[in-house]
Amino acid sequence: MRISASLNKLTAIANTFVTLACVLVLCPSVSHAGSSESVAAKAPVSDVQVLVDGPWAYSEDPRDAKRIVLIAPTASSINHFIPAIGYKDGDLELLLDSTIEISNLASNPCPGCSSDNPYKPKVDRQSLKDLLNSKKGRYVISLPKPDFYEDGKHRESKVGMVWWGDCYPTCNGSSTRAPFTTQVILHYITNDSQGFTVNGGKSLDFEDHNRVEIYMNPKGKMEDCDSGGRLAFREMVRLFSLKLYVDYGDKNNNYPSDDDPQDCLGSDPQKPSISFLRESVTTRKARLTVRRRSRPCKA
Image (cartoon, rainbow, N blue to C red; front, side):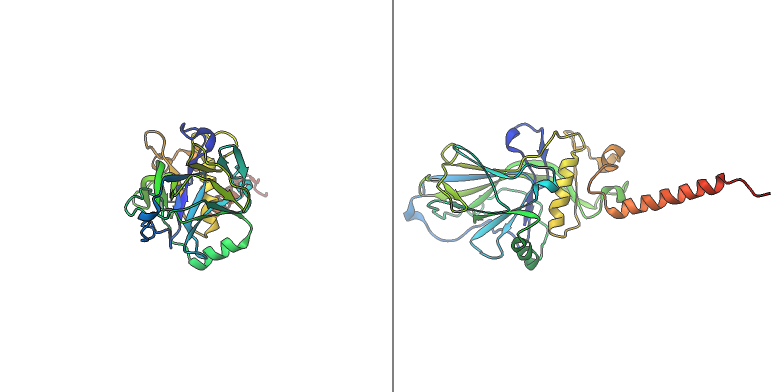
């Protein structure tokens, strides 16, 4: 499975309002080589591109080997708007479970064309099935398996199994640091550009003749620590019972986990509850000590 953190639709080029959750690809994951069928006789004429922006994970659908699923936390849990899909004439809000079909697929795989770099945690296949069948606590979008994948945007991030505040100042080596994909583009080769459907509705026209945008916009503005992106990542990995933490560098690739600024790590929504409990116990002991010391001695 892959997890994707991406730019929202309103600012697809600028770096403001980035909601980075690092594209997560869940394993057993999508096969990037595609099918081996020959389609030379079909004469494909169009490369349909589905741009996926927002805190999404993606994986091969364990229920149907010919499809993939995009998975995101609920909008209310991460302070986002409801996910939507953009087409030629507007936008359509998506349901907790949505199915997208693309017309006249030519199935023209391009082994070696895939160029995305998601983070790839392993997820139990049955647990993934259970999540897909639960019908709550997440958004799921089902699509045909793409012919290949592309890294639309990326940003250097660190992902590790230990929260940064618990390993500082010796966090080096405890995480994976790379320019992870933050927007993934799914490519489909078709015989024409007749459009697509959502949940069995009427046919919708592509933007710019061949493009579809799936997005989930954050509410409010992004601050320097990007607590919104950290919250989105936390809720994403919780869906799959994964113990993972993300840290985002600034434009100079300096990380809070390297220099421990309290304004970032101290307010990080990923901070494990055990850390809060530890702090509460320490604070309570300190208060008791102060109270005991402040009591007057009995004569």
